[in-house]
Image 1 (spheres, helix red, strand yellow):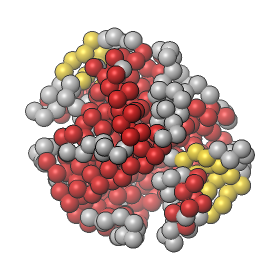
Image 2 (cartoon, one colour):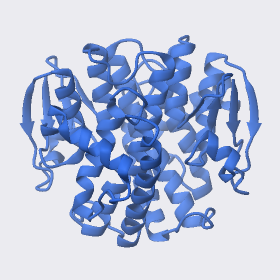
Image 3 (cartoon, one colour):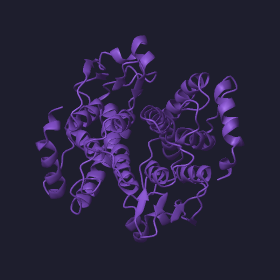
Image 4 (cartoon, chains in turn yellow, blue):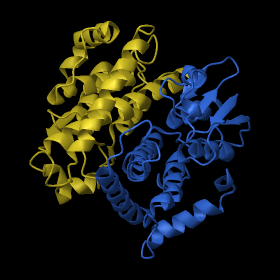
Length: 202
Length: 202
C-alpha cells in the first residue's frame, strides 16, 4: 500500500492524520502539486481528476478522494473506529464530516485558490467569490463554536473523521488569515485538544 | 420517521430516490425553501444550517446532509445495498459519490445559485463564479462519459448512491441549460437507464 501525498496541502493531511490515529504505516511518495506533477499522464492514470491524495493498493488499484480512502481504511482497519459503529453514530459523524467539508474545508480551499490565484495556470480565479468563501468559512466557525459548547468533539463524545476534516481546514485557514477568534472559547478548547494529539504531527 | 423535503430541489431528491430504491416509506413534509420556510427557528432547531432535507427519527433526533441520511438508512435498511458491502466496493462507491457531489452536483448548484441570484436574500451571488462552476460541471460530464464507456454504473457493476447523486445533478442541470451532449453516448446510455428506473419518479 502506498500513499501519494503532498506534505504542505490540507487534503492529503486528512488521510495522514486518519492513518496516524489508526497506527497504519505505508510507503509515502511526495507529489509537487504547485509544479503540476499531479497532472502528468502517469498520475492521471491513477486519478483522472489529477488530485492528491491517492492510495495505491498492492494490486495497483487506486482510490482517491480523501473520504473514500478513509472509508477503505475504516473497513480494513476498524480499530479505533473513526466513522462510527452504530447506525446513528455513523450518520451523526457523516453529518458533521459533510458539514466540515462543504461549509468549512472547501470554503477555505476556495478562498485560498480564488484570492491567491496559486493555480491560475489550471483554473480561473474569481477573487470576489474567494472572499465570499472566506466569509462562509468564518460563519461556520461561529456555528461550530456553539456546537462545541455542548459536544466534546464534532460528532459527539467520540473523536472522528469529522474532527480531522475541521482541524485540517482550520490549520490551513491561516494562509488566508482566518483564525479562531478569542471569544470562540469552545472552538479554542477543541483546537487545543486536536493539536495535543500525536496525530497532529502527521 | 419523517422526511422534511422540497419537491423541486435536487438535494432532497437524492434521499427520495435512495428511499425508493430500498422500498422505504415514511411521512413527508414539504418545506418551501424559496419562501425561506427552512430558515424559521423551528426548522433551525432541526438543522442549524437551515438546509433541506432533514430526516427526523421517531425520538426527535434529526439528521441532515443527504449523504449522512443515506448512511443512516443504509445501516438500518441494508437491502439492497447502495453503498457497497466489501471494503473496496465501499471505497469505490464513496470515491464516485464524492466526485459526483464535488465536481458535478455542487458545481451545478453553484452555477444555478450564482447566475440566477435565486437566493440573493441570503447569499451574495457572483455571476462570474457561477459561469465557471457551469464549465466545471460540463468538464466532469465529459470525464464521466469516458468512465461510463467501461463501467455500467459510476461505481462499477452495481447501481449505487453515486448514480443517484450524478442523476439528480444532471436532471437539475437543465435549469442552467447544461445537457448531456449528443456525442456523449455512454453518458446518454446511462442517463436513459436511470430514467427507466421506477425510483426516478421519486
